[in-house]
Image (tube, rainbow, N blue to C red):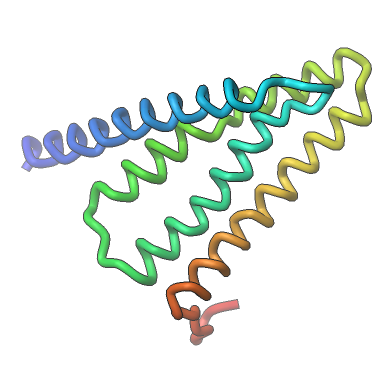
Length: 143
């Protein structure tokens, strides 16, 4: 039993590591394609908003449309999208904006990223449900 649990953990960790490498390279590609201009770190905002949209798409696909392989969510969600998006860079950039005296930019970037990220998840979920023809039905206990 312990050997099986260790094998499963190794499988999951392996696909997360592989996906994380792919996501990090993709994030680097976006930073090269969209160089820093002005006070707002557009590259980080772009990858985080795109990542939020894609996690919305992914969650609908693997929970409502497909019967997903057990390694798909760790590979795509934790690995690729986790490696692609970046909370640490976002937090550092907010701090840098605030410390440099660009308070309005810092607060706008701080709040704007959260709002656009949440809206992107909702848009990803809604678009995927609409395109796939699935609609989540509210049942007993749903709020």
